[in-house]
Length: 115
Length: 116
Image 1 (cartoon, chains in turn orange, blue):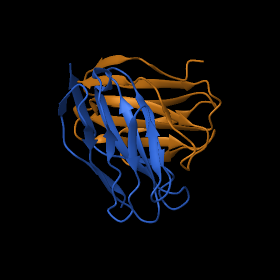
Image 2 (spheres, helix red, strand yellow):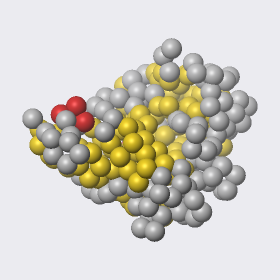
Image 3 (tube, chains in turn red, blue):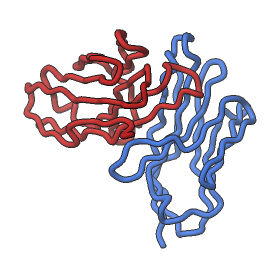
């Protein structure tokens, strides 16, 4: 039982390049999330998927797209990377989209640098 | 809108010292409150939570009490260890369907360094 896995762990891009961050969970969770973590700002929600087949914008969606490929996988795409997207990206999942009893489980993160 | 404010770090303590990390929040209604911990190089893990006023969450010697009158959820531990060195995040979650989507709102994080 691996929990939430993310690939890659580290990535360096040049401005304008594109890439996809992969996330998978093996807990049969319905809801998945993408966050970015920046110094002094905590974690901010980029996009989330309450259930398979649905996606919605979070707090900071500009410059990103997501795909809920199936129940297990939720990818985050940067179409044209910018230095402002340098951050650590975390994927999380939970059994259901809300409520205090639906704990979110986090992956180990992807550290992205855009030059 | 909902927000969470934590005390700025880093907090540096000697082993066995008493720890307090302050957290205050602004929210409509009655959110649930959480403390998450992030060890170096890892993702976040849920440390404890409280779902209503006056609830006390506790885990691994850490405690926090949901104080609605002061809108606070301060994290405390009586005797810290070197292994407690990590970044601690306070977070709140509004009710799903209330416009908050049940999403977590995080504070900026507080780094704790415990020296032997």
